[in-house]
Length: 380
Image 1 (cartoon, helix red, strand yellow):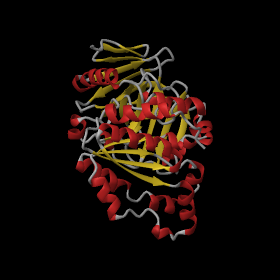
Image 2 (image 1 turned 90 degrees about the vertical axis):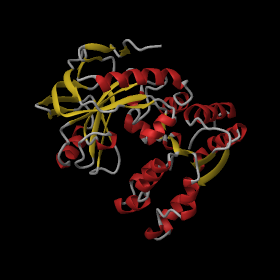
Image 3 (image 1 turned 180 degrees about the vertical axis):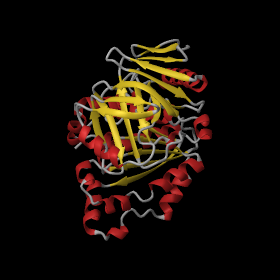
Image 4 (image 1 turned 180 degrees about the horizontal axis):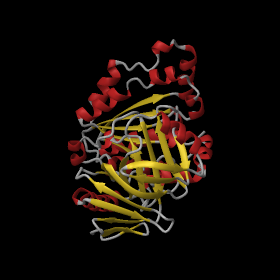
């Protein structure tokens, strides 16, 4: 279970999320959804929303009752969303979801037919919040546990501490640096990534609109359809020309991950080396996770071997959060495979793999943007 945290910590988190991330205003409707394990954090969100003059509604999913429902209720009754729940979401200006359940091992052990039924309305949820412009924040403290910490090779206490600290940082420097990077990526034509470990990879940009997740959901984000962010936030992402990649990319340590329809959960990867020729990933190796990657890669459809996107992390308070390694300030990540969700052209089967590198050099059209993992030339 989760440890108890001081009220002052919970209140500081709630104030930052509501005031600086969601930009919640007096008179706005806030929907807070939580699992029982993170109820104290949800209570702080409700209190701080009322202090602001907003109108909060709290919805709680009790974990014990949830698992009893999975065991005892007919499968056809799972994953049902009532019209009253959809109505509450439609009537909200902002939304916070404290994700669960905590028992991820039990969740992963469910038959795929049950998991698919439970998640059947996820796509409709995303369509609704985008269509209605509902600013939504998701936080994952409620899914941090010993099993996942071991799987991803991180210290559980440090993971949890960074989930809190990384979600209470001042977002203004991340916004400034994120926009600077986005401008470079939007106007540039080519990028080169080098590192003392032997990495030397050249990619092409495609003039596409980068996405900046800076921990703030403002009117510009809503207009662009970027209404959902996971916190801690802090990354600039751009999809790249899927037809061109030449050279080698060697990931640094842990933090790589692959997502595949072949596996019920993410595939942790570390020590990855990718070689590209004529725009395709032609060779790969891993210190950890190679067998699972190979199986998923072979089963994936067209586009699995194409470069998908690059990103640069912006958050100064994260280093050890599974699935958010790319948020760490100065970390450069490369992805192959499906990138259509980010505005790219590779749709194919549901396969995407990420590899991060720390202390890399990055140039755009020959001009330095990262030097040894430090941002070069950012404006004040």
